[in-house]
Image: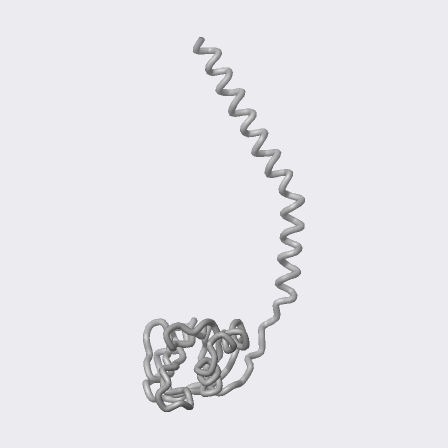
Amino acid sequence: MIKVKKVLKWIGIIVLVLIVIGAVSGNKGGTSTTSSNTSSAKVEEQPQEPEKISAQELADDFDGNQVAAEAKWKGKMVEFSAEITNITDTGLSFGKVASKEFSLAQISCKITDKQQLLPLKNGQTVTVKGVVGNQTIGVIDVSDCSVVQ
């Protein structure tokens, strides 16, 4: 009885190993196709040139119509200059950027290289580039930011 259980156990292990080997070798053809598609996508993906705009233009677009502004700007790389109102470990904030006197719009720029934050001061005007995202409670998110020197 014990020998039968051992034999069945080994047969089960062998069958499982064969299934895994078959699955892995069966995916090799698909994997190379997938990786060639992936490499094709990478070739097409060139570094995007930022669109130079004013921070006021961006803020005014979002103040005027958030849905239209997100359709226009979301996912686009932009470059703008503005006065820093706050520096945190996640990046820079730019307030008072809209033309409306009582606008709550501000821009939050998430800096990828934290070393770029060290020499900066609140009140300093800097030029940054990054990818525009959504607006939440008046804050326009810009990710993958870097300070342009």
